[in-house]
Image 1 (cartoon, rainbow over the protein chains, first blue to last red):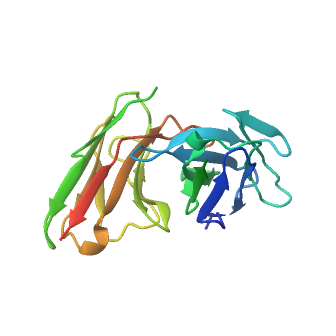
Image 2 (cartoon, rainbow over the protein chains, first blue to last red):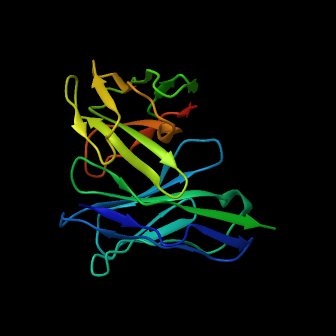
Length: 111
Length: 113
Protein backbone atom coordinates (compact mmCIF):
# COMPACT_ATOMS: atom_id res chain seq x y z
CA UNK A 1 0.00 0.00 0.00
CA UNK A 2 0.87 3.68 -0.04
CA UNK A 3 3.35 4.98 2.53
CA UNK A 4 5.08 8.18 3.56
CA UNK A 5 8.49 8.26 5.21
CA UNK A 6 9.81 11.04 7.41
CA UNK A 7 13.28 10.02 8.49
CA UNK A 8 13.81 12.55 11.28
CA UNK A 9 11.75 12.16 14.38
CA UNK A 10 13.23 15.28 15.95
CA UNK A 11 15.02 18.26 14.44
CA UNK A 12 16.55 20.89 16.73
CA UNK A 13 17.66 24.24 15.36
CA UNK A 14 18.80 27.63 16.50
CA UNK A 15 16.62 30.55 15.49
CA UNK A 16 17.67 32.02 12.16
CA UNK A 17 19.08 28.82 10.69
CA UNK A 18 17.48 27.17 7.66
CA UNK A 19 14.91 24.42 8.03
CA UNK A 20 14.70 21.27 5.95
CA UNK A 21 12.37 18.42 6.84
CA UNK A 22 12.54 15.34 4.68
CA UNK A 23 9.63 13.49 3.14
CA UNK A 24 9.57 10.64 0.65
CA UNK A 25 6.58 8.65 -0.46
CA UNK A 26 5.49 5.48 -2.19
CA UNK A 27 2.21 5.33 -4.04
CA UNK A 28 0.41 3.31 -6.67
CA UNK A 29 -1.08 6.51 -8.06
CA UNK A 30 0.63 8.30 -10.91
CA UNK A 31 -0.64 11.72 -9.84
CA UNK A 32 -0.70 11.92 -6.06
CA UNK A 33 -1.29 15.02 -4.00
CA UNK A 34 1.36 15.74 -1.37
CA UNK A 35 0.68 17.76 1.77
CA UNK A 36 2.43 19.21 4.77
CA UNK A 37 0.35 19.59 7.91
CA UNK A 38 1.56 21.40 11.03
CA UNK A 39 0.44 20.74 14.59
CA UNK A 40 1.36 23.17 17.33
CA UNK A 41 1.34 22.10 20.96
CA UNK A 42 -2.15 21.25 22.24
CA UNK A 43 -3.69 22.00 18.86
CA UNK A 44 -4.96 19.86 16.02
CA UNK A 45 -3.16 19.45 12.69
CA UNK A 46 -3.85 22.04 10.02
CA UNK A 47 -2.78 22.32 6.41
CA UNK A 48 0.47 24.18 5.76
CA UNK A 49 0.82 23.61 2.02
CA UNK A 50 0.06 21.10 -0.71
CA UNK A 51 1.10 20.28 -4.24
CA UNK A 52 0.15 18.20 -7.21
CA UNK A 53 2.46 19.54 -9.87
CA UNK A 54 5.84 17.99 -10.57
CA UNK A 55 8.86 20.28 -10.12
CA UNK A 56 6.81 23.30 -9.10
CA UNK A 57 7.67 25.18 -5.89
CA UNK A 58 4.73 25.75 -3.53
CA UNK A 59 4.98 28.39 -0.80
CA UNK A 60 2.96 29.36 2.24
CA UNK A 61 3.75 31.30 5.43
CA UNK A 62 7.47 31.37 4.65
CA UNK A 63 7.71 27.63 4.05
CA UNK A 64 8.16 26.04 0.64
CA UNK A 65 8.27 22.58 -0.88
CA UNK A 66 8.73 21.15 -4.36
CA UNK A 67 7.21 17.88 -5.47
CA UNK A 68 9.81 15.77 -7.31
CA UNK A 69 8.16 12.71 -8.79
CA UNK A 70 11.48 11.40 -10.10
CA UNK A 71 12.72 10.93 -6.54
CA UNK A 72 9.28 10.63 -4.85
CA UNK A 73 10.16 13.48 -2.52
CA UNK A 74 8.42 16.51 -1.06
CA UNK A 75 10.85 18.10 1.40
CA UNK A 76 9.75 21.11 3.47
CA UNK A 77 12.10 24.09 3.68
CA UNK A 78 12.32 27.53 5.20
CA UNK A 79 15.20 29.94 4.89
CA UNK A 80 15.24 31.12 8.51
CA UNK A 81 13.65 29.34 11.47
CA UNK A 82 11.58 31.26 14.00
CA UNK A 83 10.72 30.28 17.56
CA UNK A 84 7.08 30.06 16.53
CA UNK A 85 7.94 27.33 13.99
CA UNK A 86 8.39 24.84 16.82
CA UNK A 87 5.73 22.23 16.12
CA UNK A 88 5.06 18.73 14.83
CA UNK A 89 5.11 18.51 11.03
CA UNK A 90 3.39 15.77 9.06
CA UNK A 91 3.93 14.91 5.44
CA UNK A 92 0.96 13.18 3.79
CA UNK A 93 -0.04 11.84 0.42
CA UNK A 94 -3.23 10.83 -1.32
CA UNK A 95 -4.19 9.56 -4.71
CA UNK A 96 -7.51 8.03 -3.85
CA UNK A 97 -9.85 8.04 -0.91
CA UNK A 98 -7.28 7.67 1.84
CA UNK A 99 -4.85 10.26 3.13
CA UNK A 100 -1.70 8.54 4.38
CA UNK A 101 0.48 10.35 6.90
CA UNK A 102 4.12 9.96 7.79
CA UNK A 103 5.20 9.45 11.38
CA UNK A 104 5.87 13.16 11.84
CA UNK A 105 8.93 15.31 12.53
CA UNK A 106 9.06 17.44 15.64
CA UNK A 107 10.86 20.73 15.03
CA UNK A 108 12.28 22.52 18.06
CA UNK A 109 13.66 26.01 17.51
CA UNK A 110 15.71 27.55 20.29
CA UNK A 111 16.96 31.13 20.80
CA UNK B 1 -12.94 27.58 8.13
CA UNK B 2 -14.50 24.15 8.37
CA UNK B 3 -15.92 23.23 11.76
CA UNK B 4 -15.42 19.76 13.19
CA UNK B 5 -16.52 19.15 16.75
CA UNK B 6 -15.51 16.14 18.80
CA UNK B 7 -16.93 14.94 22.08
CA UNK B 8 -15.98 14.16 24.70
CA UNK B 9 -12.62 15.93 24.86
CA UNK B 10 -11.34 13.56 27.49
CA UNK B 11 -12.47 10.09 28.46
CA UNK B 12 -11.24 7.55 30.98
CA UNK B 13 -12.53 3.99 30.96
CA UNK B 14 -11.49 0.59 32.22
CA UNK B 15 -10.33 -2.43 30.30
CA UNK B 16 -13.34 -4.13 28.73
CA UNK B 17 -15.41 -0.98 28.87
CA UNK B 18 -17.63 0.44 26.15
CA UNK B 19 -16.72 3.81 24.62
CA UNK B 20 -18.29 5.94 21.92
CA UNK B 21 -16.48 8.93 20.46
CA UNK B 22 -18.57 11.44 18.55
CA UNK B 23 -17.75 13.74 15.69
CA UNK B 24 -19.92 16.30 13.93
CA UNK B 25 -19.03 18.50 10.99
CA UNK B 26 -21.20 21.35 9.78
CA UNK B 27 -19.69 22.05 6.39
CA UNK B 28 -21.53 19.54 4.24
CA UNK B 29 -18.34 17.57 3.65
CA UNK B 30 -18.77 14.14 2.15
CA UNK B 31 -15.69 12.53 3.65
CA UNK B 32 -15.05 11.91 7.33
CA UNK B 33 -12.13 10.14 8.96
CA UNK B 34 -11.04 8.78 12.33
CA UNK B 35 -7.33 8.84 13.13
CA UNK B 36 -5.38 7.93 16.20
CA UNK B 37 -2.20 9.78 17.06
CA UNK B 38 0.63 8.07 18.91
CA UNK B 39 4.21 9.20 19.39
CA UNK B 40 6.44 7.52 16.85
CA UNK B 41 3.53 6.41 14.71
CA UNK B 42 2.05 9.68 13.64
CA UNK B 43 -1.55 9.77 12.47
CA UNK B 44 -2.97 6.38 11.61
CA UNK B 45 -6.29 5.92 9.85
CA UNK B 46 -8.82 3.77 11.67
CA UNK B 47 -11.99 4.12 9.56
CA UNK B 48 -13.41 6.57 7.06
CA UNK B 49 -16.64 7.25 5.25
CA UNK B 50 -17.74 9.03 2.10
CA UNK B 51 -21.37 9.48 3.02
CA UNK B 52 -24.19 8.57 5.33
CA UNK B 53 -24.40 4.82 5.79
CA UNK B 54 -21.01 4.24 4.16
CA UNK B 55 -18.01 2.84 6.02
CA UNK B 56 -14.53 2.05 4.79
CA UNK B 57 -11.81 0.23 6.67
CA UNK B 58 -8.63 2.12 7.36
CA UNK B 59 -5.15 0.91 8.21
CA UNK B 60 -5.56 0.08 11.92
CA UNK B 61 -9.20 -1.04 12.28
CA UNK B 62 -8.84 -3.87 14.79
CA UNK B 63 -10.88 -3.29 17.92
CA UNK B 64 -12.83 -0.40 16.42
CA UNK B 65 -16.20 -0.03 14.81
CA UNK B 66 -17.57 3.11 13.23
CA UNK B 67 -20.89 4.35 12.00
CA UNK B 68 -21.87 7.33 9.85
CA UNK B 69 -25.48 8.07 10.71
CA UNK B 70 -25.86 11.31 8.75
CA UNK B 71 -23.67 13.44 6.56
CA UNK B 72 -22.75 15.41 9.67
CA UNK B 73 -22.19 12.68 12.25
CA UNK B 74 -19.49 10.01 12.47
CA UNK B 75 -19.03 7.81 15.52
CA UNK B 76 -16.17 5.61 16.66
CA UNK B 77 -17.05 2.68 18.90
CA UNK B 78 -14.75 0.69 21.15
CA UNK B 79 -16.83 -2.19 22.46
CA UNK B 80 -14.18 -3.91 24.57
CA UNK B 81 -11.62 -1.26 25.25
CA UNK B 82 -8.01 -2.32 25.86
CA UNK B 83 -5.02 -0.36 27.23
CA UNK B 84 -3.45 -0.44 23.74
CA UNK B 85 -6.27 1.85 22.64
CA UNK B 86 -5.11 4.61 24.96
CA UNK B 87 -4.42 7.40 22.50
CA UNK B 88 -5.38 10.80 21.13
CA UNK B 89 -8.17 10.43 18.58
CA UNK B 90 -8.81 12.92 15.82
CA UNK B 91 -11.82 13.19 13.58
CA UNK B 92 -11.39 14.97 10.27
CA UNK B 93 -13.54 15.89 7.31
CA UNK B 94 -12.95 16.92 3.72
CA UNK B 95 -15.07 17.96 0.78
CA UNK B 96 -13.68 15.22 -1.40
CA UNK B 97 -10.58 13.23 -2.21
CA UNK B 98 -7.42 14.18 -4.06
CA UNK B 99 -6.21 17.63 -3.17
CA UNK B 100 -8.97 18.47 -0.73
CA UNK B 101 -7.81 19.67 2.67
CA UNK B 102 -8.50 17.67 5.80
CA UNK B 103 -10.07 19.70 8.61
CA UNK B 104 -9.44 18.25 12.03
CA UNK B 105 -11.43 18.41 15.22
CA UNK B 106 -9.79 19.29 18.53
CA UNK B 107 -9.25 15.64 19.45
CA UNK B 108 -10.41 13.25 22.17
CA UNK B 109 -7.88 11.97 24.65
CA UNK B 110 -8.83 8.44 25.70
CA UNK B 111 -7.25 6.56 28.58
CA UNK B 112 -8.02 2.88 29.09
CA UNK B 113 -6.94 1.71 32.54
